[in-house]
Length: 269
Figure (cartoon, rainbow, N blue to C red):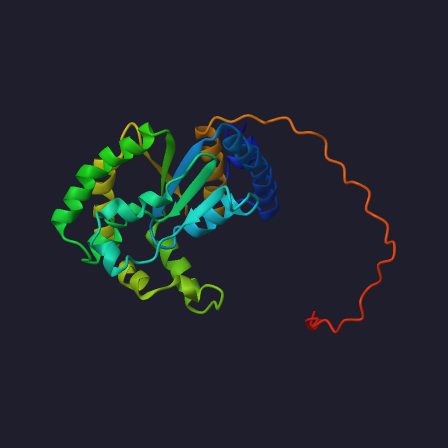
């Protein structure tokens, strides 16, 4: 079980790629151990990621999931609600996605949309927000009392770094999908988001479901810190495994490769 970052990564502002990749590989091994333990014990884990646009939520989620099974680590990133969903109790469409035994569910944005983007952009009224902030701690208490381990992370980036990251998306063909009209509108309302965040923390930072804040100006460090923190909050053990040895492959026998006109893709590279 890991207990945090290696000592040689705790000092200085820069983190070389090779150091980052070495530490990330070590943490990935721990997440595989965690995965096996969660399945073995039938644990139910829910991890919520919220934060500023451009704070690195997607990259952090990818760092968690890239070496584990998507059948056990499920990522939930819901689109805008349908007309029917808009008429439901607000939290209703999120509840079916909560984990069953042996699952870890990661929300890339969550029910806290109501306290953030929906509030700032006027998609809901202040009375609805007040009701959400009043009831959410009670709902989360019920979630935790049902046996779900609930972890909530807020990724925070400074204004200058957010500007740099969003500007980098404008002309990068790999990142244009990350810059929506909503992101542009949100960008101009930094302090409205700050006030909404502060009120959200005040109402929903509880003993049973606390908020953990992640400084993410340095994305590599933020990812390593989040992965280490998750491992520290979910008790697990390294389960013994039987030694694996590949069996002998069968003999060819009377099999011959077919003379079939396979449609092989061009070898461009």
